[in-house]
Length: 252
Image (cartoon, rainbow, N blue to C red; front, side, top):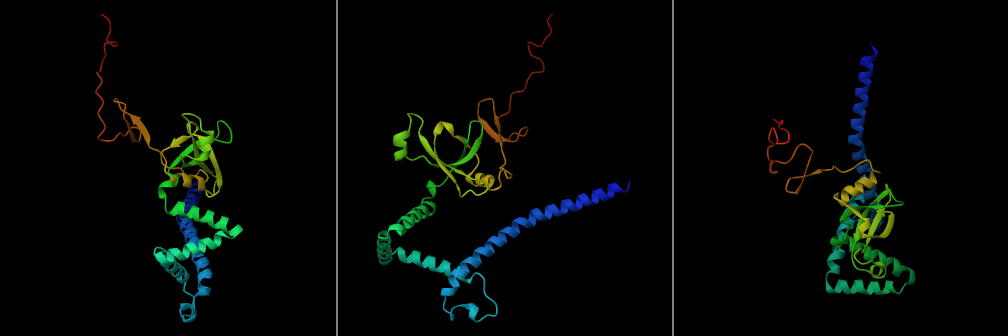
């Protein structure tokens, strides 16, 4: 008789703790990452700020984030100057100098192309999520459709009516690493989830899955989204069935 209240009380305490942990853990991790990033930028920028312009020289405690603000202002100012003719000429001159360095030119060229693709051409980013049978038949891996543009690889390997598509298969739980593969279009199963939901699925190792809307088909063949048993209000009403059909009437 006395064990039931104790068990119930401990269960409630455990549920309270888990609820608080679920609320506090994401906040704490987000604050830690943001604080670490601000400190990392400050450690790079503040040593180059003159002492008379650095508030840490006048205040008893350092000001976190001042280096980040200075870095944002400088980056914006460099972008403004680069948009002008004089700034563009200076940038081209610097790029020509880097182009003469055997090792540096490859690194700089690759990084510049990546950043231009990510920041400028947003239409070329991942827009679809799919499934590919990998590493064997019957085992499916999540992939991001990278590009369906015509390349030299398509010219040499494409089959008629089934072109190759570049897909990126990320590794869990770090989606920034993975494999680039060229897969026939017929072997890719496209999903309705967004790229953000696919990234969450990878980072959480399958624990955070996006909600699924069940598709229902009406009499005219149109598919509508919703939960089973709760069709939308504007859906076409189905004709009422008669209580008794000709086949169910008794023979006289």
